[in-house]
Length: 226
Image (cartoon, rainbow, N blue to C red; front, side, top):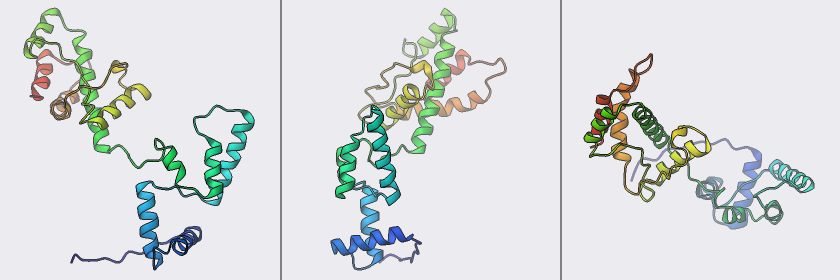
């Protein structure tokens, strides 16, 4: 049996009351610590229900009244949410609005990778636009006869990375060179692009102050993906 460790938590009165009420109502916990694990640990982590304080409820109702009075267009069915609050159906919004109530979050490592990849390709494509015909042919020869271009990430196996890239470009207006692209490469690219970004990192540090990517450096970065 693995080693156990005692943990202490400080909970405010409202939270303690909710835990006690939940334990009494469901009979699924013999102690407050059991209730914390079951109610907060399972329901909150899995996103099966929402928890609102008295202030949250009041604020929402005031906002709903304003929205309805001012006839503000909204994608949220405020009357449905109000009915869920009045009836204590806190599970209902998570069922009806799954796009809002979920527990997914982009991993920082994935965001960092996508930013590095977009940055690498942004420099490459910008430089390609200024190369001479002879230099372009040299790059094409080193790249199986094609000019290189950012292809995106695989929608089936790298959907998280593709979503991050699309959000950065389309919603945040970063790396505008790629705006309007599909971002779906239809085949895995993350591993190759990671190697390219790693090869580009020391080169990038040397750019600026009139220094630009050379044809040889572009080919070096392209070769890193293989």
